[in-house]
Image (cartoon, rainbow over all chains, first blue to last red; front, side):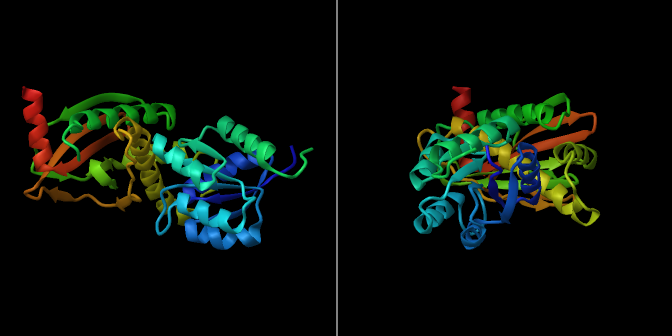
Amino acid sequence: MKKLKIMIVDDSTTTTKKMAQMVAAMGHEVIEVAVDGKDAIGKYHTACPDIVTMDITMPDMSGVDATRAILAEHPDALIIIVTSHGQENMVVDSIEAGAKGYILKPIKPEIFEKTIERVFEKYSNVKTD
Amino acid sequence: MKADINPIEVLETLVGRTTAFLQEEVFVNVANIEYSTEDVNFIKLRHITSIISVEEYLKMTIAFTYDLGLITQMFESYTAGLSIGEDERERCLEETAGDIINIVTGNILSRFSHAKTIHLSTPVIINEAKTVVRYKDASFLSARINTLHGDLSIFLILPNSLYTAQLNRNAE
């Protein structure tokens, strides 16, 4: 798989650092970080990531609402929800908002890697290596 | 909170998930667990406390309060291998406390959601010891998790009416 450009959206710096460490270990690159939904919407356009990882519970704007807003402007965006919530309704809400994947915290590196690969291979229009 | 949700069951589920998190994610072994379901008039906060509100029909406040030794050990394990500057350390330690209550509480909610979505507030951190006095319409339930590094107490703060109703149901 090619080296993917990842944008991490989470209001916890510590969680962001942990995820960045996992992304680097996969051989991909974190090109942008956002601390809440509004920040993510503002940064997506200039960052143009291959994949966005999106927390749900954030101040000001939830990750589900940010997912909808990003997809309204960028329908090809690939967004993976990363959250502690395992409630079925939340998963359904996330998928209905347009998320392409869902990962539960605490994040297992192998699940994170497989989800990124699966989402990119299934939904990307770009030919993979 | 709906009357058919048992707050004692919520507390027990929280303690179970917290114990598993301590052992599996930050490699802290739990030596002992003590429950207190007696209605107490105040709670004493430890070195650092994270607080989260559970919204909609579950309506309770949950607090995790840690001894310094325990949260420090958890932080070191949780952030192992990460580059954290000295100027970031205190903030990241507080974030660790916030991350953990968010993860543990979020993980257990599916058991109690009953087809309704339950949302969590973003965590609030209190970083000094305090005593919190019960307001007349609130009840506290608590559990203490004892480890070699120090203790973690978990508090549920809920409406007094629900606490009383549940105890009456349990007595039937």
